[in-house]
Image (cartoon, rainbow, N blue to C red):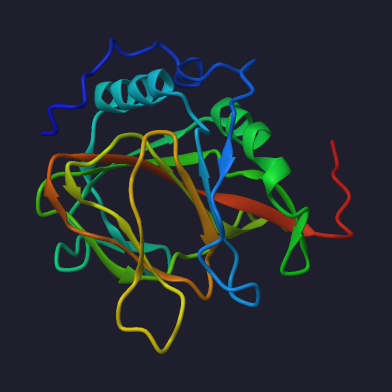
Length: 226
């Protein structure tokens, strides 16, 4: 385990890990794709170091299990040859809303002809120990069944990793090597489900914590009903 991660006492509610009144000094990194490429954004300082530690503590108190792989048709399989990390799935609307309030001004209002409406409340906490990885893959779509479905992936990094553990992005079909995004506490990576192939690179030393979720969308003409 990475000695740099010190667990705080776990909060009693996930959303209390975040300060709902905070307006952090978010830094937008230069896009790692050409202007005509797929949407990729890197934003730093979205979470404070304390918030990251609180989220880690809450996830550990909630408990991790082996991460399964979606294989289609609503089925999941344990495929350690593809991914062998641990996962903790927590649904929390308020936490998703706090994250959305911090991020939405840095995103376009529409993407792929659809209106972006918020972050999926299904938060998948990810834990990677030494040797853990998730080989190159594409993220699937999360469909609420009411006309809303996800179009963008959001990855929230919660700690530094001593060695390895970056996210690899294959943005150019002609390249054999991915662009690497290094984990940093409070950093957020956002990219399109398609056509961005990506990987969770092996952790070589230490432990990696992150949250993976989605940015949801609905048709432009959609009218919300109460």
